[in-house]
Length: 340
Image (cartoon, rainbow, N blue to C red; front, side, top):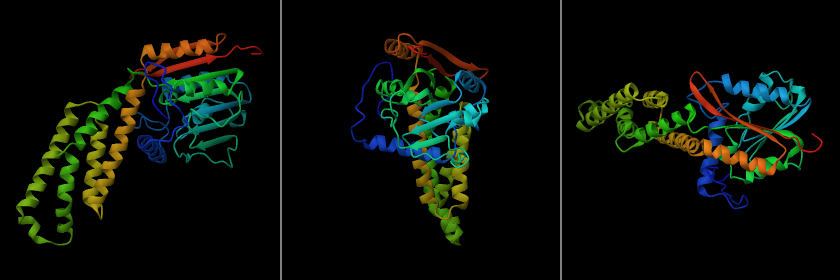
């Protein structure tokens, strides 16, 4: 945990106690991964990654020794182990340790059936509990760029074997993921503003509860009618924003959830409060993605740093893209140290 790498080599002590903000960050990601998602861009893709990102991992899998001991840092719900298996690597040819600072426990993983894939919750990338030179490959997908740099990079190289490789997929500043996340931040700010949809729903909720209890006076109450009119106006504003804006999935999802809460929740005021908190965590994740996405200068700085530490290594970076646009940076470091 700590400040993400962003155009400089910021070193943050990993021994300091977590701040309230860091605890909120871990809680936000823990809540998210417990939802079962395999990746951090839920409104852009469903299931696991496909296309250019899957092709990247297919290429990585072809370069792994057999068997291969792999470390997956910032694993989330284990998209990399799944992608490697989907790429054709036999599960018994993989020995994977997957770590994440969040409290993870992927639902798809059965320790009894896949004992060679081990998940380690509560493990930051900056302090890995593994011996030096333990892994043939250190992999990361949309994770290493969130860590404190260069502490996490040093840890990755420490646990890498002399002939080991790095395979890192990182957020690109110009990617469709970063663009969607930025727009979602704007939408969430708009939804949560004073007198926005959430406030309007909260004002209407007690009147709906009185109606459910058979209070006929609600129909003639000017305050109830004012709350209803305000909520209807908010819905019209949401509809207008959906028509005019981009990356509007979050708007439709929030509108549907608010309707469901008002229609069915036994305690809509409490449920709306919980939903507002969930949206706050969603905004934290989207804002963090935007702030940690790397531009070309940041990628170049990372490559220079790696080359200085591993002068005999071959380092390549490409922008992973497909029809929708740029998805990510893909970095491969093949280590040709003595004995490789």
